[in-house]
Image (cartoon, rainbow, N blue to C red; front, side, top):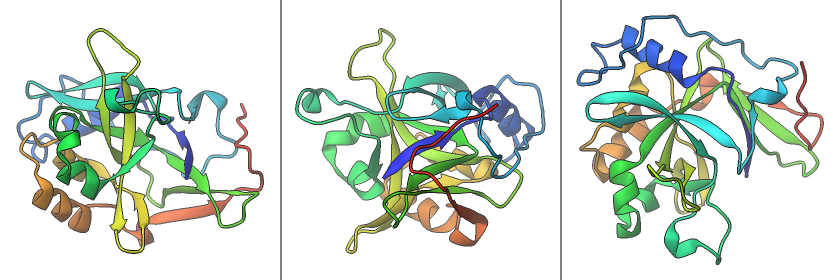
Length: 222
């Protein structure tokens, strides 16, 4: 279970990062000044304001009219058919999102990227959390879906996308580094293409570093 995101890099800085690499993100206009984007792996401790837990606001990047823009949305999506019957969805598997007609609208209009330094998830030891981050000095871009209405309502929210072994139910977050992340925002993305980017562009295990946290509760600091 994914319990907390660490988001120290702002979405505006991420837009500038993509602007620097316009040739790879053809068709996108970020209207942002070029800037470098660099994070420090596994900062200790994380600042409290950078810790994002379910039901908290998270920054995301979406495509609208050929442009990239920043939005703020709650982590946890509640589609209308689930309200009152199940808790907000914090993550969904890629194969379900891309193949089920239930998600047709949000997978067409709501694909977004979430720039993070890393995330905490439940470890095999019940009393501990593991922290995952990139081995490189750059943020990780998580694939996600977001409903962000012009007039906010109780259904609005964001759910992360996972992928992996369907048979054994071994799923992990669909994550990218650098401009490869923009492939998730292509307007014509279909199931076959989604499978391809998960297989060829997603962050591989050797690119990630996992650290076992000492406490179950994630603590912030200054």
